[in-house]
Structures are given as C-alpha cells and as structure tokens.
Picture 1: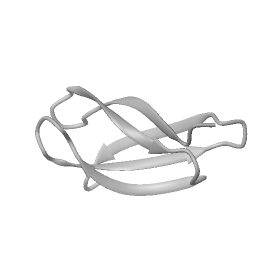
Picture 2 (picture 1 turned 90 degrees about the vertical axis):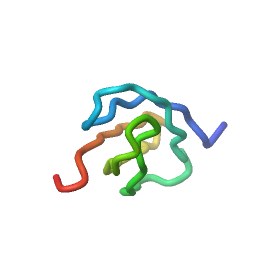
Picture 3 (picture 1 turned 135 degrees about the vertical axis):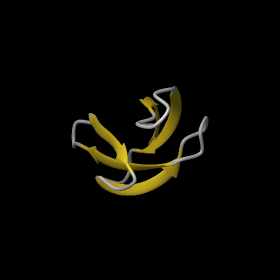
Picture 4 (picture 1 turned 90 degrees about the horizontal axis):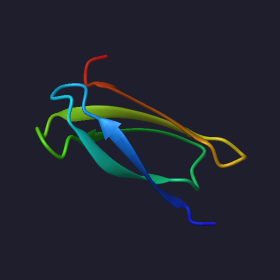
Length: 63
C-alpha cells in the first residue's frame, strides 16, 4: 500500500485549492504548512483510520 496520499485542500485565508501529500503511515498528525498560493500558515489535523480512510481538517493559524 502506498503510504503517501494526495489530497486537495482549500486555504482558509485565500480560499484557493491546492494539493498536499499526507503520510498514511502515521495515525494522527497535527502540523503547520504554508499555503502554496498566499504563503500563510495553515493548521493541518490529519487522522488516518485502520481501514485507510483519511480525515483532514484545515484551520487558520490562531484557531
């Protein structure tokens, strides 16, 4: 199984969509990544379930 998964996200600042890579080998991840378009920091909260399903939320830096 490929552990890297591509997901499309929408920036909570500029509302533009872009793709990110999610590491499916880590069950729960919280990290900050800059938007590819406006370069503002986005909080990522990723949960990977045992069946491979991925739950991803993005929020503003201060949320």
